Amino acid sequence: MKIPYLVILIFIIACSSGQNPDNQELSYLGQKAPGDIPEVFGREDISMKDRFDMGFTMSPDGRSMAFGVAHESDPTKTAIYLMNFVNGEWTAPSKSFLPDNVNTFFPMFDPTGSKLYFAKSTDGAPTDLWVADYSDNKATNPQLLDSVFNSSSREAGHGVSTNESFYFTSNRDDQYQCCGDVYYSEPDSEGYTTVQRVDELSSIEDEESLFLSPEGDYIIIQAWRNEFESKHDLYISFKTKVNSWTTPERLNSRINSQEIEQRPFVSPDRKYLFFSRTSVTQVDGQDSYDSDIYWVSTKSIFKPYLYNDDIDVDIRYGEPFQLNLPKDLFKDVDDPELSYQASLADNAELPEWIKFDASNLSLSGTWESKEPLTIKIMVTDSAGNSGDFRFQLESI
Image (tube, rainbow, N blue to C red):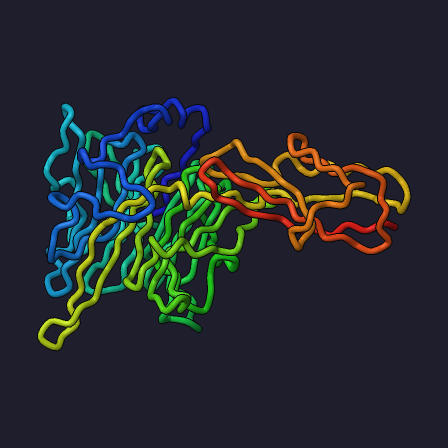
């Protein structure tokens, strides 16, 4: 089947009962909110000791939580579990909410909360992508997505945005069957008909799962890049004004450990990143795997990023100039109030004949240099995260 075509306007989504207003407090099992150091989430209900818990999602209204439990030797015990917030309390985890809930993985609600996407392996085949209707705390009518998404290889991570962009990971590239890449599809008048590899987000290594923000403005990827002597790590990339993705940046080492970090998810209020951390230990000479779900504040994750670098100015030696930088030069997912400074590339102060107006993001003066100058614009958000943009100016 084809993915149900979502004809959704932003204002409808904002008013939908499936959406959580930014000012509505969500319930997180009564746990104290974490800071910059990840903590196990739901030790008594979700992250059970000596169990392989992996893949977590919440409905947009924050009233349903779903997570996966894997069992390598007994597929009938590999399933997705659901908890619901009813009468001020969370129900016990249950797998009966989804028909034929066997060998299922990676639950992810759509931005309306009316669909639940997941991966499923049938008869020992590689996992495919499925979708079910979701309402009244139940998933119904589960169906395999169309072959435009599912191949003979493994499909896993997946996410859909409010404008219907669908991103997922797949091992369909014949040259690198060992490893997944990131693919996406945009609907046309006939629905979803083609998919494309997202080269900016893919590599010759393994991209295995992902989280796409509802607005489609950032994506968090699980990837094995063989960096920092670690295994699978989490990387973040942001969408720019020209609809390209920034180079994926590895999240900090408090989140990415020497273990395996995977299955990212950001809470509907954008305050917390959830992910699975898998450890490998030796028990009686054999590898023993354990996986728990962690959560951490997103304050150190959502940094200012270069959104619009469209700069054009004519400068003539000995003549006045004014360069108005784009008002949307930088963006920050969770912080619209950014502060700016300007210097030369080596952090030296600007020459006296160049004035920087931080409130209007403009440079002005009378050009007195016969050599090019590299200017650095530094930006900082309220959490202390920073970034910079460097560009060269010269007279003609």
